[in-house]
Amino acid sequence: MGAADAPELRGHRVSAVIPHYGEPAPTLALVRSLQTQESVRPAGIIVSDDASPVPFPDTEDVLVVRRCSNGGFGSAVNSGLEQVETEFVLVLNSDLEIGPTFVGDLLAAALPWQPAVVSPQVRGRDGEPQWVGRHFPTVGHQAIEWLSLLARHRHRPLLHEAVGHDTRCADGVSIPVDWLMGAALLIPVKEFRAVGGFDERFFMNCEEVDLQRRLRARGVLSVFAGGVEVIHEGGGSSDPEARRQWLVESRLAYARKWGGELWLRSALLGASAANFAVNAIRQAAGREVRAAGTFRQEIGYLRRRPS
Image (cartoon, rainbow, N blue to C red; front, side, top):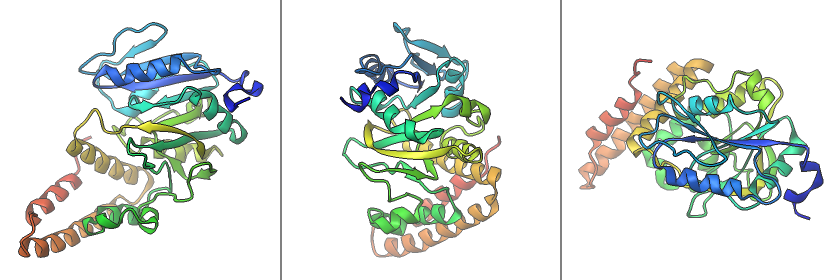
């Protein structure tokens, strides 16, 4: 008997919420995978269409929530979760590939830890882990990540820890961590609602850190379940420059909310100055790099946009 067939799972109901923006094909593929799960299937599948330029089509046995404006990941999840009536919700990125027993396997891994937010191991198509388990962000983590001269060393465990990745998270390991990347999260609905859901001031990125920090204050753990895994494409519905701008703005917004925004801005400015010095040397040596242009671009990311 596999984990997904265990009798103790039968009294626990799970819904799935999938934010949608962009081409429908990946979302449709994920919906089909959920509809054909073995043993444990979602009691409801909700697609939250975040004013997508290509609307998600009406689909049998799927509730489509159609938002009037594009509010980002957290807003879309909140809209979808208004329709959930089950004990747990699976919040899933639309560009995931899941196995035939994924829902049951993750639920089985999650139950011993409840109340807890639980994520499986998430891999890219290249098979590399995407560092699901992380430490709460610090100024140091983000300044080190900003330093381009360290980019070629980021495969090293020491550098992963230095940018906030929890390197204890390995295949087969189940362990509490500070927070979990938001690609695939099993969340207790009662706890989610008790803290007000995602803070919709975060358009993209950091909304899951903020949520889990508020849940932690209620004693709700974040648990990495390394015995279950999914494949995550990542970044399919946006261009790289927009993604980096959203990331920087969200990190600054997080620091504004939880403290340390001035320190973070100062540290990133200092890291940009260090990047400029290194790039100027490389440019003088004939390398194909524009030191001044790169510096202006990095400073541009740090300019505070109107809210």
